[in-house]
Length: 430
Image (cartoon, rainbow, N blue to C red; front, top):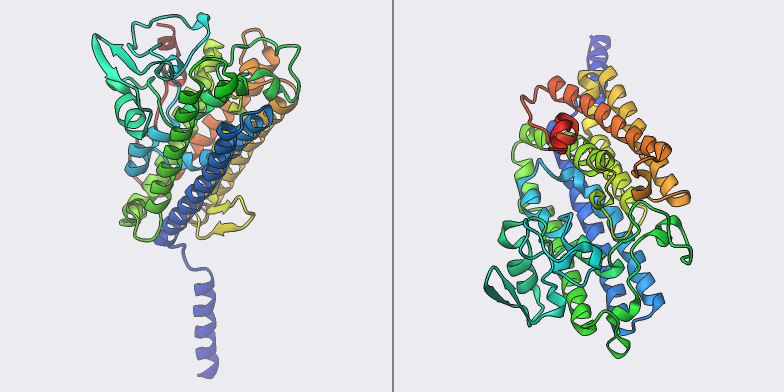
């Protein structure tokens, strides 16, 4: 009797050790990662804000360089959060305030003559808010005398419903720090020093923020714009970090129903991997050989943005995020859930994601040592084109594995983001 009881207890113990992964726990890990990533993005934005304050207080080549480096550092945690898009309505409704692109920079500040003087598609194309206390759009006067959050966020951002009117977020700040990148897909100017990125990116002078030795005109308004838009970024990231804390709206929404939480996770992974990253951010620019289609076009930081998007997707699937301070947030994972359904499929997904990571890393390393991303996509650059195409191909293969996960977990029909550049390439040239 004792032997039978011991055997039963042993079997129960072993069964508990291999208990099925709880969907609720997987979704909780996802929410925990989201909160940590947005918190890191917030803290990095605050460091950027400190660097911007130093720049506008004492404009110099050194303070401008420090602000640029702080912006690049701030992109690292934020780009990892993009795996949370597409499946979370609260994130999607908010995201355009912080990462909208591409932008018609002539709405914000002065531009080179090659930019042109008008656009049939955008009445705000060259209104140059920094240079004008009032602008006229379609015969309507708009008061721009006070540059504040109301003007930038409520009046100018996506004005007339045009997504190219980006007045806030990372890319507005990027443009103000670097200015236009006028190098296209060609070589970097011979007189510039540093990494390929530093030599080839935009080259706004620090005196554009120096009221005493002003270049570009309206230096105090430019400094005010930069200060205000950076504060807005901090405020927006605070809002989203809070939304993923215990009791926050985004966390409550995704954890309300574990099945819907899994759908949100796979929607985000598949949509970012395929339509957004492989398609709109990479294949479209490669097809057109157009540097205007690169994500971080003023700073030539696109290689990092793409790379950290992939890291973010790996975070979600593996249920693990390494924070900026080196600590780790982890828990029950989508990978574990898939492995219990189909171990071979989990191995396939992990292998495809590693392939994509390796392709992105190769692209990142090339950008850091050989040529920038916009040079890689240049017409006639067979070697550079191949590096970018390899990452696109890996993203597509990875997405196909995500689709098999959706089927294996019986999540129903999930609509993933598409892209004409992948689905209807002939439409791109029409």
